[in-house]
Image (cartoon, rainbow, N blue to C red; front, top):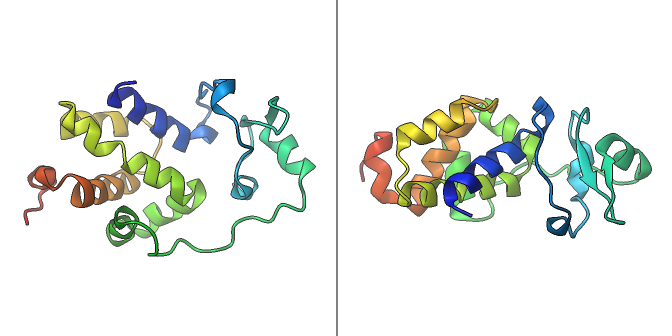
Length: 163
């Protein structure tokens, strides 16, 4: 899969509650959702693959597991360098969005930025893709800055940073 498609797919996975249909391939959904999935604020229109491999509404899934505790640990600076850079660059709105999607989803999204640029994508094209989706602009900026800062510093001039 080329990195442009992967980038768009990760972005789409970050925004499932806005009515976008995210294609799911049953063979990709081996493990049940993480414990934190039921802590999301919005269930409407979302589906997941249950432990039997069946597509079920997220509302029904979470109702079936009332004992599943939501993740209560706040996002911390522990973890990889990207995550630390993201926390440094993120505004309160970007942090709130990151908490609603989960740390791993943010990291996965961040790991698509440099391969996209390395494959010939430009920062203006990346911004156009990002702006076409209902993700807070401050979140996209923080992810892009953190990814470039930690994984592909050769693109720093494009975001107005030189080191």
